[in-house]
Length: 313
Ligand SMILES: Cc1cc2nc3c(=O)[nH]c(=O)nc-3n(C[C@H](O)[C@H](O)[C@H](O)COP(=O)(O)OP(=O)(O)OC[C@H]3O[C@@H](n4cnc5c(N)ncnc54)[C@H](O)[C@@H]3O)c2cc1C
Image (cartoon, rainbow, N blue to C red):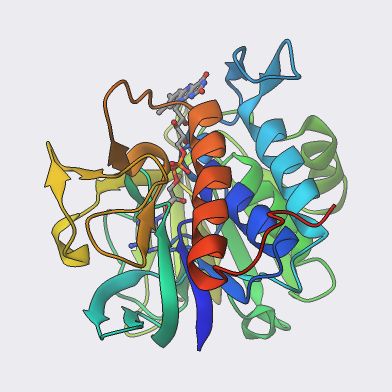
């Protein structure tokens, strides 16, 4: 049984994990998508100007710096990626959270689930064939395989590089000549592997399993067929609104109502960040972080009423 389950690894959830570890809580974070960072992953290249301590920082770099800080505590408070909270059962003094990966029992819950979840954009056709991946959780599946990666962002380029030495061959296909990924990594990939631009997918071939991909040059319309055992699709994500009613707490205008210490209408369930409302609430990173610290302080007090000191430093 956990003392705390944090739902969501956006800025609020990541910082709450750091605070929970500092307070020595037996906690875990569950995150429905395959990466942490929440909404910031949608605008990685955008500059953020209102983050204390930084006159200007890209959202992608900000996520990295949150993670840098959290990394010191990842053993104490791990993040379970690809794990979506689906439902919750309320018992007298604990909760059971149903996730797509199984059940978790916990004494308290911190909802840091923001504006919603992010689901990978899918292929328009051939999506049901075996061998098409939107999320990677087992690198062994690509051992000695001919792998094609679709996309031009950091996820596509980073995963293509990660498969080096595992896959038999790696081909990256992107619809534009320009990438939205770190130039150094794009250069590395181009030196060692086949990178085809500007091409889009014309047809996915295969009976039950993917066998080949036909791609089309966006300018010349030339068609090229590429044999492949596995297709990794990194076309970005679509935001999906959260259902707030599953938590059985008071809501107003589709946001969770919290008291000053971030507790919801249900004892043991706290909420922070973009999913909450109170008089004067601002939906910003900095407020989400402050709320996370407040919530962890309140949760610690709830679990350990006798403790006098909030944080170990
Ligand atoms: C384009 C854009 C630009 C912005 N620019 C700025 C800016 O310059 N400065 C600023 O301060 N703010 C900015 N914001 C707002 C800022 O990004 C949000 O206020 C902040 O991300 C809120 O953090 P959060 O952790 O509460 O939620 P989110 O960032 O939304 O993270 C929530 C996380 O919870 C996960 N999740 C949701 N449901 C579940 C579930 N059921 N189970 C498991 N996990 C779940 C999601 O996948 C996500 O990772 C911007 C927002 C956008 C869209």
